[in-house]
Image (cartoon, rainbow, N blue to C red):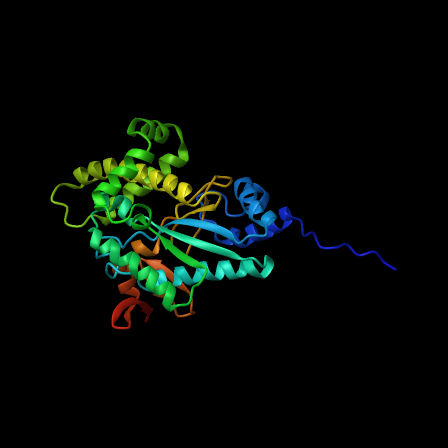
Amino acid sequence: MPLTTAPDTTPTSTSAAILNLLLPHHRTTGRAHASAEMFPHQLRQITDFVREGAPIVFTLPGLPCKSPNPAKVLGHLPDMGERLSLTFLQTLCTDIEQIYPPGARMVICSDGHIFGDLIGVPDEHIDAYSDELRTLIRQLGLGRLSVFDLRDALGDLPHDTKRAHVHERYGPTLDALRAEVRADGHALALYRGITRFLVEDTADFPGTRSALQRECRQRAYGVIQRSRAWGDLIAEHHPHCVRLSIHPQPIGAPRFGIRLLDAPDAWTTPWHSAALHRADGTWTLLPRARAAQEGWLAYHEGMPSHFERT
């Protein structure tokens, strides 16, 4: 009678199979193809959950608020871009459940309040955006998703007080951050990417283009400081979780960069753009002004939602 080999169901092999579900969506500026063993941080974190037989918990800082530039977005509330992104994250969790019955949960760490003052978005718009994310999760039945924001961490203190507390307690010094940007290629790419977004997101700047660029370079350091601080606060409130990122991350980094939707480059997000529904049924993200040249504006429940290609 021929011998058969039993499937490998060790925690490590299960963790690799789970990570393989994430790899097609890896957001990176490096090589396009990678294998699970090239991500030791994530494999170790996932294996810890698998050994305990517990649901895997992912934390994803992002979905902060809409860009303040009306040429890029449809308004200040979530639209089809966020609906598709939330649905994608839910599907990712249910796909994990197919190979690992305890499944997975995704904590969306909405970070708009952390740097709202630096990107020119009022706190009431950030509150409305985060509240609508929660409403969409409930309406769409996305039970594996939840939202965590600065209100959950520090309650009803004034937003400026909360920002100052997080920055002072967790943020790196400006000198240390500048030294890192000078010495580390990934840090430099992040700094340049955020600077570019700040320039693009600034509407009606009264000065020259060069003055705007100088100001945005300074604000970019502040955004990175606050983002780092937010990451440390998340780690304190959600220890041992698998850390995801909406920014491109190099292979093997402690955080796994994840692409929520198809876009022309590795930096575009639903909150900096509008969704365009192509004729073949697929979706992409484009600045509103460009999407409007390629399609007509569609509405959902009376609100601007996305563009349909003509």
